[in-house]
Image 1: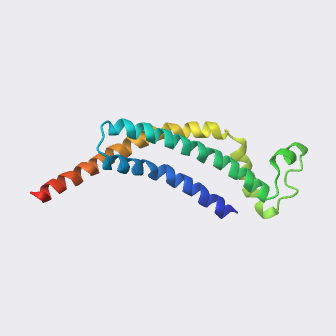
Image 2 (image 1 turned 135 degrees about the vertical axis):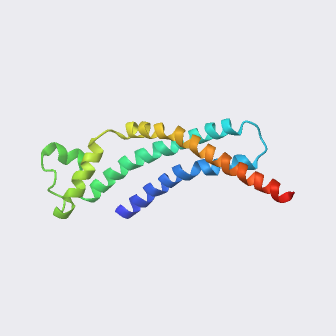
Image 3 (image 1 turned 120 degrees about the horizontal axis):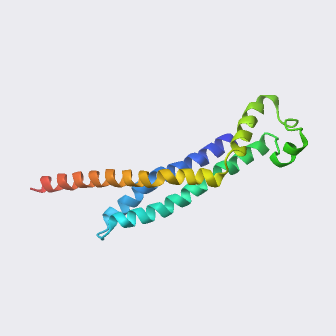
Length: 144
């Protein structure tokens, strides 16, 4: 269960990392104006959706793991018999999951993630343009 949740989280995180490169590659193949504006508009929209889904999934997956370990966050937390159904070897993991869920909510985690999206998009755009110009200059020099 933990492996499946970790793999799905890594998949969403990988999509967040590689989507701007894919968008830039698609836009560089097309002969259109305002590639930078299109890149930032499309990239921001897609990455906002991915960041929101990543933050929500992390919160939801913690709740799934708590249920998997036998801890019911909503019922047991009120009665005071929190760890009756949790095996002793899983209690430390459950305690860390409770801290994660009890902290700031996923919307605020997503907002903190949004702060890093625009600089990341700018960095990808600059690196992509630099690589594209070097490849273009190399092709021009090779054709002479």
